[in-house]
Length: 366
Image (cartoon, rainbow, N blue to C red; front, side):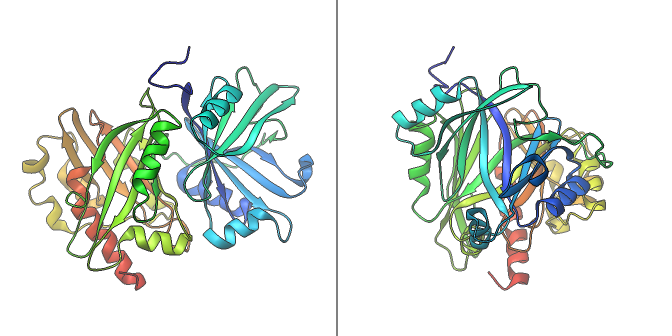
């Protein structure tokens, strides 16, 4: 039954599709660094003539990496404009047609009408709507489907080995929009998808000597889907949001936060596989216990890994942010471990964004 607090009856994030220039190589990268196992494939060998896709999965995290196969393909134009990045944040629903119809009734723009895909394993229904920039949300109905991903994909039956990283779920996905557009998209998620506002950070919360940004966190009725939305605020120099918008060519997904039950082990595994993380100065840890109280982890272990800590009324969280995952300074990942806290690290904002600005300065973009 659809509830008033979740009118589209959303279960959670089904998958995140990234458009990439070379899906085979991207699949190798995400397998060996994040520990995502290749589970399905579609391409020339399956009768798909214009693109190829690899599906990688680990517990509740599923990435679809898609690349064009032909010159002049729209996916190629998307990559030329944005670089590798997130195109589709697909949402699992009970009834894709009903969710699509409700979204259009609430003011959404359709990208794909409800379409049925069937094979011997059952059927999947998919429909899509537009959101900020060229990002879309697909509604995925897969009740009873027993195939590896969707009709048209074949299983990868002998996958290469996958490292243990401890990544378990997508905690939240953050979008960057242009100056003055945050309220438009907050209203969109409220009015079209039925989301509520969880928290608001303004330029007093998220600011440094040089730059600032504003952010509002939207979540669905169950709290399983959380989408912070950022916009730049005026500052003395270029903010990280402005740098993103310049190099991505407009609004898009800034980072994907991946949850783990042991952040130290996860960071060690990812760093050992070649993922570079943002570093914070040792002074951040000088008064750590005074700021956040007693925690289970040792200060030395956190400092050695540049892991940040923040506490709220419900508990604390640990988090760390990677450097960009591709050549353009756009999409990156966050690793987060929650110990009761449902927040987003407000107490870490200044230290984090000063660290990001140091990376911007190295790129000549501050």
